[in-house]
Structure formats: C-alpha cells, structure tokens
Length: 236
Length: 257
Image (cartoon, rainbow over all chains, first blue to last red):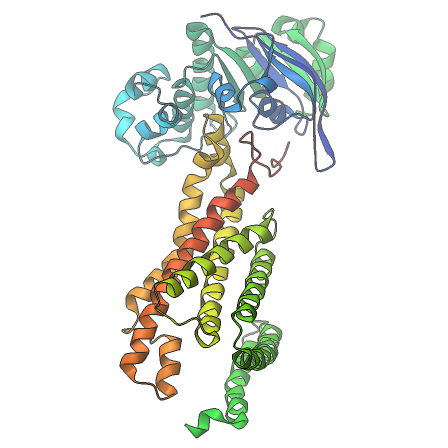
C-alpha cells in the first residue's frame, strides 16, 4: 500500500478571538513517524484536529497526497486518517463492541480477535467489559478501534501521557511496529523528548501556534536542529 | 366550601409559606428571596390570568383563545431558553417544540370531539400542555448541553471514527429524553395510587361527580403524555444540531490547546 503523504500549509485557527494556530507549515512524509513537539499551549493537539477536520481551519490548507482536505467529505477523511486520543474513551459493553464501533458505522467487516492480536492483546479479551481493563490496555483497544477502519494514516495525540512507564514503552513499541508492518503514516504529538528520540523519524517544532522548523530525528538531536531543541526543551 | 373562596383563606395559607421561609433562614438555604418572588409572582400572574380568562369567556371568540395560547407558547419558550443558557438557538427550538406539542394534542382532542371548542376547555388544557412541554424542553436542552460538555472526549472520539453528529450524540440524546420523560411516565403510572392529580382534585372540591372528574383526568393524562413526548423529542432532535457544524465538528472550543 502506498503511504499517505500529509502536508500542512499556512494553517491558522482562530476561535473566540484567540489565535491557537498562527501559521503552521509542515510535511509528514508517507510511511514515516513525524513527531509534533512543543510547549503546552503551542497548538499541537489543535494541529492534529485540523488535519482530520475535527475543527475547521480559519486559513491555510492540509493536503493528503496533494489533494486538499477541504474538498473531502469529513467522515470519509476521518476514516482514512485515524486518531488516537490521550484518554481512550471506549464505547460499548464489551471490548469487541468498542473495537468495532467505527467499522460498524460504515458497514466494514473486521475481526475483533485479529485486531486485538495486532495491538498485542489477548483475543480472548473480546468479551470483557472495557472498563475492567488497565488504562494501558484500553489505550491499545483504542488503537485497534482506529485500525479497524484500515486507515492510511494515524494521528496520535499524546497517547502515552496517561500511562505508567511500562505501559508507555509497550505502546511506543506498538506504534513503531505498526508503522513498519502496515506502512502507516503517523503523526505523534508528544512533549516527551526521550520518547520522540525512541520513536520518531522526523520532528516538527511548534511554539505559540507557529511552526519553528522541521528536522530528521538525527538532525534534531545532534545536528542542525539542536539549537532549537535546547531552546524549547526547558519549557516542555 | 366557603372556606376556600375567601381572600382570608389565601392569606391564611401564606402562614405555611412563612414556615418555609423560617426553615430556609434557620437552615441557611438562601431560598427566602426565591420563595418571596414566587409568592408575589404567582399571586399577580394568577389574578391577572383570572381576569383575562373571565374576559375571554365573555368574548366567546376562538381567535382570542388562539392568540392567548400563542402568547403562552412564546412565554414558555422564552422561559425555557433562559434556563438553557449556552444552548445556541434555544428560543426558536423551544418555541417550535412547545408550539407543535400544543397544536398536535389540542388539535387531536378537538378533531376527535373529546373536548368542545370553547375557551372554558381550551385555555386550562392548553396551559397544562404548554407548561409541561416547557419543563420537558428545558430538561432536555440543559441535559444535552451538560452532557456534550462533560462527555466531549467520547463525542470527539466517535466523530474521529467517522460517526455523524447524530451518531456521536445518540447516547446523550437517549439519556436526555429518558430524563425528561421518566418523571411524567412514572407519575402517570402511579396516578390514583400515590397522588391525585390537580385537575381532578379541583373538580371534586368544586363539587363535580368523581367519575366525571376521573374521565377528564384520563383525557388530561394522555394528552400530557403525548404533548410532553412530542416536545422533548422535537427539542432533542432540533437542539443537538446547534452543538455541531454541518461538517460534523463540535462547536464548543476545546479545553486547553
């Protein structure tokens, strides 16, 4: 499967007089993991929501393989570009229902057992009440739920910030693994630079709603991006 | 019977209100002012509507009756929309829902010949329909507003999985409608056992045949059940849209970034 390329051009988002995004340019190459890094309030989560149009950008555009998302049906767009949130927010009385929520809405066939296996959970969990799972397990169910729609890209909004160290590492490994196995383009919002160094291929730096630059992981941690990283790292 | 019909008796019942005020002061509930306003407003409003109804009975004009009912609908919608602060377009939504509930139920009663087309029936019955529909409208709108705010992560997660606004809000809508309708459904179920409805009590005290009072009460109960359901369902299906854009996006700004 060819991987989806995401491009953000001159993106601005103004709500209630506040400029949350004030000009963001960024490229997220197909099949790579791009980390969006920046202090809290930089607009990272808003940028993700603008990519799958959970919010409508005030100015600027997002392109998927060169096509502007403003021309796409928002529901179709969201099925192609899945999203995983900080808090899992699962629905349904069973893990199976939770995993199949989106797939059922659009009449897509999916095997809950297979999806659970893909995210490293025991397929026998399908019948359990999602509320009885640990937060780390719930987060993996929410990743399985996004994968059930067979997306071309995945937006991850601080997916490990509610997890303990062990669960965090497992989700990080899963993200890397899915990226390799499924060739998914991924955008990972994170304020944890060590996580970014472990997981990401590229880094986009945001501050006060503006993009300050983008680098390969190597450049960000030991090359041309090092100065920017040092400037920002005290405020993460 | 005489006891109920003197001004003095009304003043005596105020003594009970004084007990409530004393309790509020003693327990520091801070309700004295609200109780006072309620006492004065209810007196003035009831006295005024008494004279208005008296006048309309004498006029014997159905046009005037319709005008009065329309005024009641608008006032109910205004009250309901003030209750539902932060709900976009609450006034027109409540006006449409309460108005439709009143037209549908009163229209049906008239069309089937259950009640005669006279002010004596239409104004009190209309008042009951409009008042109860107004409460259901307020309950439904405030509940949807609070749940959309509180369950924002769930709503957003559903939208992100390709759900339409309607699908994303469906569980919230269901709870809101249940909350709005269950009190009346339960009251209807237990009526006659736990409490005797106001209209029936009024008729019996006024000297009517108890079986005649029961007949009217049954009409009233079914009418209320119908109108309140219509109002709540209309308010629910109309007002949830105000929280979303046509592109299935939540309108409330995100917390944090």
